Image (tube, rainbow, N blue to C red; front, side, top):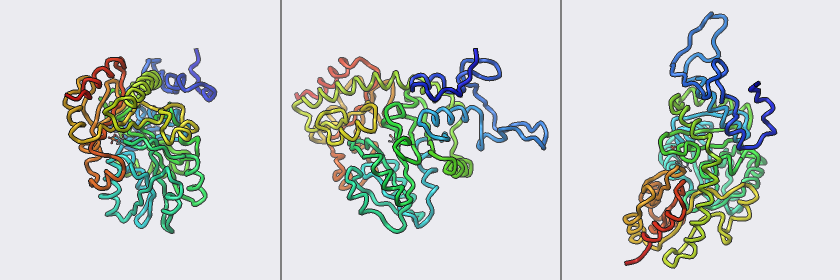
Length: 389
Ligand SMILES: *Cc1c(COP(=O)(O)O)cnc(C)c1O
């Protein structure tokens, strides 16, 4: 039986997840990608160097993962990094001192920290804007603007940016576009199809899916960007180790099954929360009254598995965190187990309080990442935790 994947273009996403090109080892027929636990590779003859020569520059296990994510995102080349932040920070090195970047205002806390306390020292300037407001994006343009950085739906208030609109505008001004697709994954949203240049992932979340591996991925839309990012990945050495590459490939195979199941639960949870008397606000793009719903439905195939909600005060939020039994109370999201986090004191603790509040990340905001438990049990558990005594 030939394992030729060259005809794979016409296949559906679920099939690509399983038959991605390296699922069968070409040398032995083994049913998983071998872990090439080697730092260096023998040169049989100097005139004819091996395909891989040193694992920072290239490793067959990492290559399999990089080709896999490139295929899923519909890009030309993928890159695997030691963490989501390694992927994001390495990609920002495409910019130079003196450049300016326009960024989604309620961006992931670590990205905010990178921009405001590290890249700022390298003279890379940032303007944070509400990306849902196109006028704000246009007004932020400066003569030295070189890039636009998008997160949609954003974290943790799930604001939706019109990807195609921003990408087209950016292109007309020669700006590089980067999009953090962690919340949606390529199963729900493929930004390259909407004109984005570079897609980024914290693969620690839904792609890995089991809270057991820290990893980052990037996918580029064209070969030139691929060459430039390759130089950075190799030059900075921010690569993912081979054991973790293997673990990530293993997790990614079940992406669709996990996302579908969790999303169904998240939809139920969001609806239930929106009817709960002590919840003042629910953020989920699948809710009828979500302001970005229509745009989201145009560019995405699903609503994801993260629901944020406001219980009105920091005191109430802490009470819920105290009483909740099923979800892990932790940072992170996108795992088999549900995870409840408290952005104000966890993921967004680095953000000054005034900035945080202005961005809707109030002291009563909780973020629920729905896992694979039975949704009835999760709702019962949250119902008990929300009950006022
Ligand atoms: C977690 C996360 C990151 C950072 O990824 P790490 O793997 O923790 O470095 C970036 N963006 C988003 C949206 C995230 O949730």
